[in-house]
Amino acid sequence: MTDSEEREGSLNVRIASPGDEIGIWADQAMIHHTPHGFCLDFICTDPSDDPLNLSGVLASRVRFSPLLAQQLAEMLQTNWERYAEKAMPPEAEMD
Image 1: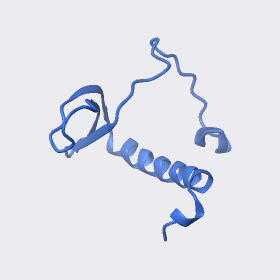
Image 2 (image 1 turned 30 degrees about the vertical axis):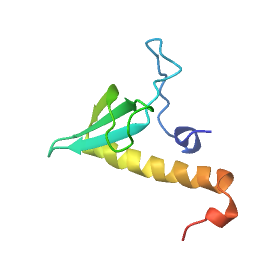
Image 3 (image 1 turned 60 degrees about the horizontal axis):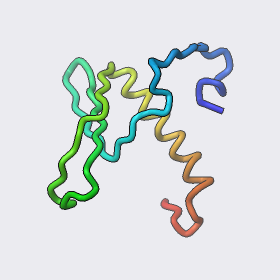
């Protein structure tokens, strides 16, 4: 169940995909901001590179508003907590 399905009376959005439903792999991310918005770059690096001198390809760039940035931060925190509760061993629990 997603966050949007859990909220009572929430907006239901039907999403159409341009054909890349399986998504794009990224193993690095960079975020930048201006006074007007945020930019999140997802990068796919070459695993054969020196770990201190990586080369990569921009897999996707997403630009969004400060309001969406706040909502994303909250959704990531909530979902991370749910994931960690199920997937992390008890000895890895952090205070």
